[in-house]
Image 1 (cartoon, rainbow, N blue to C red):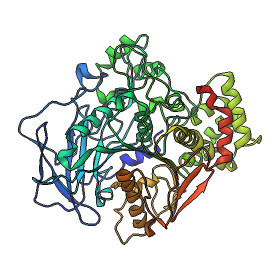
Image 2 (tube, helix red, strand yellow):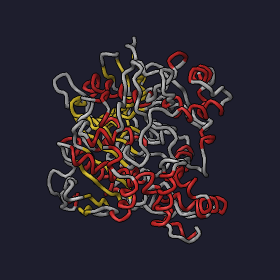
Image 3 (cartoon, rainbow, N blue to C red):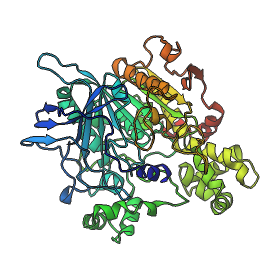
Image 4 (cartoon, helix red, strand yellow):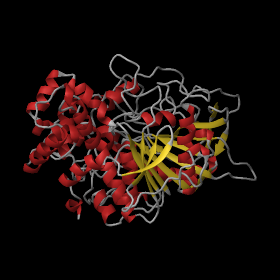
Length: 553
């Protein structure tokens, strides 16, 4: 659950933005009030007008804890947006606060008295498994994206039990973290023109949990009209574990971990309101069940109706198969290795390897995310073991098969199924990709080396988002060509709904063909771009047989 999360938390505590500052502090006037920002420099030396830590919703504290977000009120005077806001509560020795519902706006061209550039807006939803990370600028720096003519918005949203507790009744219907995102999107719709952005050309971009969020917005009735394109990177909402109406057992576990009663929703929620946010957040490790698995604990749920506005009203895949989703251009895909690196830790841990070998029926559903403790679950486990691992006892030589199970079970299969289902019903184009470019840096290296394991989960973010964990990529670095390619693909998509509207040398004269039920096409984003077909077809066919679409029809 935690490898990448805690690696990111180990980033040095340097100043939040490393770009060159000027003495000019821009001021933007909005209907909420006036906002003062700061100026930094992009990789190519452009001035980035940066407005950070803008409150978009009231602090969800006291009686507002576990409640839907309440939009922020207007303020008097000048709002100081020259520094990052706090992180939403999560584990670690980091500055956290429940008053974390903040967003950041970055632009290189503000409106003048006579002209508003009205540039496309990229609305970025951060990863972190719905339990960690943030949009703070030292982790989500604008230095690469803002060499393009776009406006970038990055947001915080509530995490863990504070954002996603769901008891299946009026005490906690669920999805407050998703509703935070909706309120932030509404803020953008109302105010982004003041920053030179076009409220009618908003692209939601998400990675991992952020990608799952993007797909949830695509089907959510609450998000209608708030975005116009969608980019979903390395996660899905269409996999082998259907959404539920509640996660009451997770709420019970959370209660026990902080010494609260776990018998009724009322007792759980009332007691949790007496605990500090840090005490709740620091229990994350207590949710592990097998090593560091499962990778996901909290999920958006299909809310039951208690009179509240519901974020999800039916299973997302069911909505897609019925064509009941927002018809916008969609781009989605994954990295070539994704979560397969987790197999390395497992096969090199004799105790975990022995447990998986001897208790595969029990632990495989935890690790690879499907239903547990049922007759069907046992059938699925046996078939997956047979197809991916064979009949021999597990050993270090099982690393490739276990890696494929992690890669497909956590991400690949659900992404593939979701993209195909969306493409079949979408009236706009749907684009599918696999990212395979390997540079010098990675979120996971081979043990005791600086050699990347492969191209793993998060590695494509290295070329879109500047993080202080890694060197800033400049024009002299061999990886900079990929920075330019990826940011331009996203910018083209934000402007036109097509990542390659015309042939160009930058894209190796390759045009990105949308996926259809007939062509099964995807773009291979390696050192060069290349259209291909039938991504991992043999592997995914095993999962399709075990988890047919007919379950949702």
